[in-house]
Image (cartoon, rainbow, N blue to C red; front, side, top):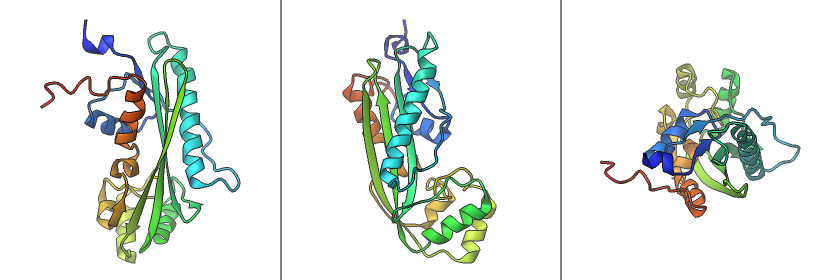
Amino acid sequence: MSDKSLRPKLVLASASPRRLELLQQIGIEPDAMLPADIDETPRKKEPPRALAQRLAVEKAEAARRIAQAREELAGAFVLAADTVVAVDRRVLPKCELMEEAGECLRRLSGRQHKVFTGLTVITPRGVERKRVVETRVRFKRLSSAEIESYLASGEWRGKAGGYAVQGLAGAFVVRLVGSYSSVVGLPLYEAQALLGGDGFPVRGAWANRA
């Protein structure tokens, strides 16, 4: 019997290849990816930190309902995350239109913004563990040519704040204080702490990894 068959199951409540790659980076392989279709619209006057946490909880709960209906995933750990980019208290959108992304980049240019990633783990016993990670990021002052070139890349599509720090936009970052992996989409220290704190074997696949 394999080690994987002995350990608890894990569901990642996301379809994001970035979040999957981050988990794999620390030796954690989810048994299923179950993206949750939820309304991500901020509530009136909802602070960015509260929005990130609420959406992570709602994603986790939606994915758990799906998992519980599948015999092979019933009783699995569920891990969900949601990343929110904010300038002051203004939440920037997950951009689908070039005009949206251009507006975000002009707003981020030459100034500091905050990235909040909410994490939720639901244990096999149904207990919810929650955390919000805050990271401060400062962009260089962007020229019109830089913004136009980045928009032409298409990398901004579907990204909170209109950029992907792990891609071309890494060249825009003057300073980052906090968790780089959180800005990418999943704070690794906090994710392994929440999972490991409730008995998931976060280092189970480390042996002979090299």
